[in-house]
Length: 481
Image 1: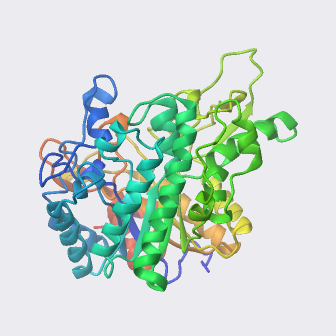
Image 2: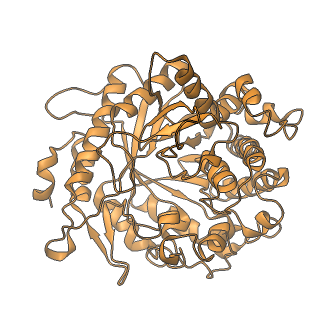
């Protein structure tokens, strides 16, 4: 349990980590036998990303791995959550595996272990091999089958060294933003495709889980990371607003939680989306595969959503708070309106409401009381405009954000939620998908001209937290070093 005092203390066993994703930091997109991904294609398409930015170089982590691991050690991290780039390991998504790609992660994992840092590997963080997209992408069943083959290979390769195996990161984004609204790669806009992608991502998770269990048995720690949405009605006394919450919750949350943890798709989801698809892509036996169970659920949290029933007598608001800029990210929810949230806001335009973190963790605890939880992403983009000697960034807004959200995690733990750790998003500034390099989430600043790394105040603050397991005062950050 956490201890409430002037500055909250966390248990000695609590895991402190940082998270990144392959396409956002690695660069070297044509080196070492790596094949193209959907994000290479999408970001190279005019008009898709801010000022045409791509991840071709990103933070150049591919060439600076040793430096970055040394930085993690200095930060005092217990664990590092990274993703394996499927096209670096299997360039076309099927057929031969690329030894140079396997060797890259082999070196990274060994360096982490030598530094005393537990590797937490995500098998898929959105960079689908372009060859699989050309063959149909996630709306095609074969993509899930190919993922199962890939999962077996990586688990067999790194079997004795990876602490936690996470199959997928935020399948909500892959399905709805990639195939519904088109604001993420591959940029397709079809509601039926988005829902087929939901199922095939769930199926891929189940096949990945089978790989982990088959290879590692009881020694495995299996995880799935979801960006679960905290939905609140505009008017809590309005039955129509409560129904809007129900409908959005089915698409955003239960479409992933139920097949994995309960072995079914919710009936209201199937009914709500019947005009979009008949769900015939769900075959006999699929739900036995998706129903994998988990050793720990990864939770990504940034903001909350406020919804109402759309009546058609005013322009619809699209402010859903997680990058879905068009309503087509929500197939079958044509009568749900996402309302602007009261501030304050991060630079992404997302509202800052730490109470949503507590609410989400307790909802999960009450629904799945035996399931351990881990915060696998939480952080914020701010302008980082105040830079002082040696490139140090006075990012007080970020420190305050992290302090308040970790305090909210502690509130959930005090109320009984079994939360095992926290991974800050992100270790370093990176390619922020459609926003390119215009948004900075890192606790370490990347100079995109020189690729030099500079610790922000938040990095020094986080190091003090990993040392003491006690939340340092926000105002102390600028004095730490």
